[in-house]
Image 1 (cartoon, one colour):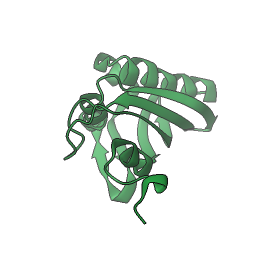
Image 2: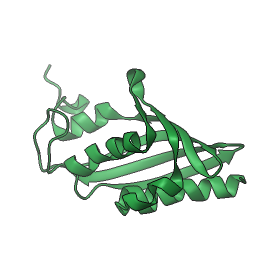
Image 3: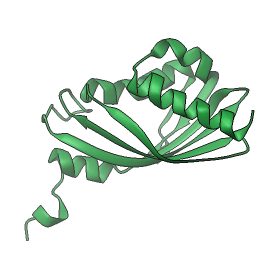
Length: 144
């Protein structure tokens, strides 16, 4: 696969699966042995693992959207700096709905094999998200 084809796969995941909520295309885009590696050793596997990964933001933020800010590809890897936004209307882990809109940023790496994402690493700015939800104080609002 060319780097442009690999970028197109990443863009399809953003547009069709995450923003469009079309899980029917996952078999076209995600390898059966897909592996996700998140912070602190968090892992998920297979197409069901990918569904689990995106189900939490979709449940907590029904208007959740992701935007690719920068996308770079080399060899079998695609790196994307992205932003997200959404209004928390549902549970986020143990955090009840706040009805607050947040914006977040992150970086992900997809390794693409035979036209499908085989591995996925991701880092999100969770501190900023928790501050925007009011779970942790923002630096300007911290008590002295």
